[in-house]
Image (spheres, helix red, strand yellow):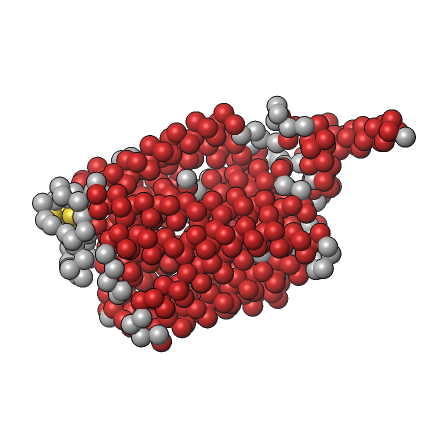
Length: 462
């Protein structure tokens, strides 16, 4: 739901704008016609630079609430933080057509508000996973959940193109926003903060999860070891790698529909389908990667650090190679789509690498750290679409070639830094005993109580 709400504008903007005007003001022309758009839907004369700013404005707000969302979810629980963020995002999505009618500045402002609302979602998710995911099942569980991001993108891009063609682009936001509101109702009714409070979980499963996570301690208190975090090279390794790989991902996420339309000359419906295709591969890649990573850890083929670095290397190096190859394949639209699909499929391997490494090195602060490192990725999300718009405005073919080359170079740099400084063990500053005075003693007794109960059950069986 988060990603379907986020990427709706990426495909709708093709129908919203008069692409025959590469430069110019952001004036509104509600009665002008546009190829591929439904009759009666307004069309706006926005330049490519303006479109880049509109697409990147979401990330201005998105970066501001990442760390705040992680901190609040660690203090007050991830369920309500995540659900509230999605509900507000869904409501604001319903207002996008009205904001566009008022002018491009209002649309940019609304996109910033959407970013502020959605920024708390993924840090809150990591706080929940730190309480629910046993170490040997962590890769598969978190990657299955992350696959929802790419499946949501796939469905949104596929359906949005059809909606734009048949109903008009405003209905993209009405339909997606309405579905998001309905989803939030299910979230608040069905999701629980941790295994201890879940009414339907079996006693055996509850005991298994809580015992497997007993070593990592409880959620953090009011204070955070900020100085130790700032000095932590493994944390910097994740942050820099996230910036570099997210540049590539967000560039394709926000700009690929425009590339399909302006360079490959696909129709609006074909654009939606082909722009969505790489994300189905990405979702399947997330699931298979998580299963493989947990298999390697469970069989002790590789240690945690080696697994994280291996999957990060595969997920960052091969997509860079695919992007470098795109400008050299000529005008073959089929080959281009294949390479972009491979790039977004293989980048999913970072899901078992840098993306969940926060939980390895500091499970108590996983949500907050995800907020910090995600902010680095979001900065790239702000810069990348704007940079693409500026590059393409100078020269179409050369601009896209340079955009692909920059993304590939950044990926290579981030990979080298992560391999050099990444880690797979809990850092000293993240251990519970380092902040034991901030933790209530009742929680410390909980794991031992489960161990005592398990001992009695073993004696009964004997």
